[in-house]
Image 1 (cartoon, rainbow, N blue to C red):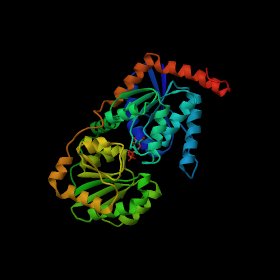
Image 2: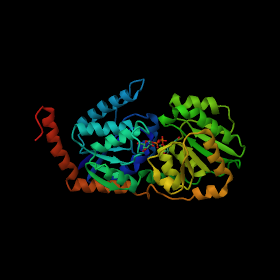
Image 3: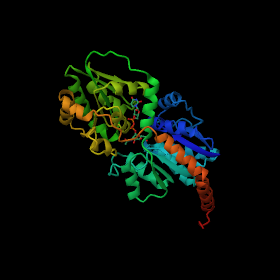
Image 4: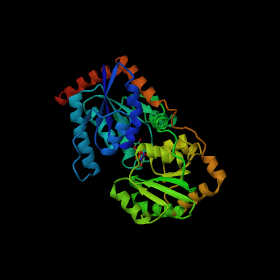
Length: 386
Ligand SMILES: CC(=O)N[C@@H]1[C@@H](OP(=O)(O)OP(=O)(O)OC[C@H]2O[C@@H](n3ccc(=O)[nH]c3=O)[C@H](O)[C@@H]2O)O[C@H](CO)[C@@H](O)[C@@H]1O
């Protein structure tokens, strides 16, 4: 039996790992142990419950007063201790979070094989977004199995000549979306005739621009034929500027983070999406919803190339102009509202699980682990590697 430790810290990791865990559970030769790091607390617990994959292990609660240094240090020591207790053959991490970085690093320190779900995304700028782009590149350096969601991501890894094997799998976010929609039933009919704009904002590099982004959203909402739903991140650095500008605007609902089923409902019902989220850039095209991306660069060029997403930056006038075009110009909206799925076909989780089971069956993961654990033990004892 090959033991796989699945690291899940944040909301997107829970959503994107769930299809992999579901598929791994169909293989008799592997066992998946879920480690919840607690990075996003109760939000992740609710998601794991929704997907029917409760955590097997948890880290102790994080110390108060998070900085990136403290967060990574706490995750690294916590995950390291879990690895010493569980002794998995493979550690699976997802994406570009601090939990993913710490999981990959702790495994690497112990010469345990690492698999990376959603590998190879690159914005092309090492500091944008910060810290995610740096974390992705570091994780790639520690990995043995790279699960690239798109051909572009596969090429990025190829170009970097990463160690390990690269597999093109699709993005599991599309599997999760399909899974959720199957279980949701039809959205309740209704509404007041105003078109819905779904907006989300949380990227660190946009924090200084939140007031002008919020002003642009307020101007769109003031038209009278539109309502805006804006679920806010718990972080005060995001909430406070949004509340200051949009708190009194009647057509804007500033809400708590939506539970995933509600988010999928809002996405299904909206006219278009304004966001700096990675996941929403991937989900919206699958449902035929145009996306205005509030960033200057994206690691997801596929939607832009397909003409269903536009990279519009954070200038107030530009956001208003692009929003008005999607509201008033039916042809412009229709051109971007073609359902297409540049990010996956809904089978990525199954592909990833099959690959892991194959590699494990061929002794790959275990062989690699045993060989390297030996080296690591010698290095730890101060002996030179053979
Ligand atoms: C730089 C970058 O792009 N990094 C990304 C970042 O994640 P993100 O930007 O996609 O994160 P969020 O915006 O939080 O969205 C996550 C999902 O949450 C759902 N959602 C949203 C609002 C809400 O109220 N309720 C919800 O249920 C919705 O389905 C959405 O897709 O880390 C991921 C992990 O490593 C990476 O994969 C990914 O590269």
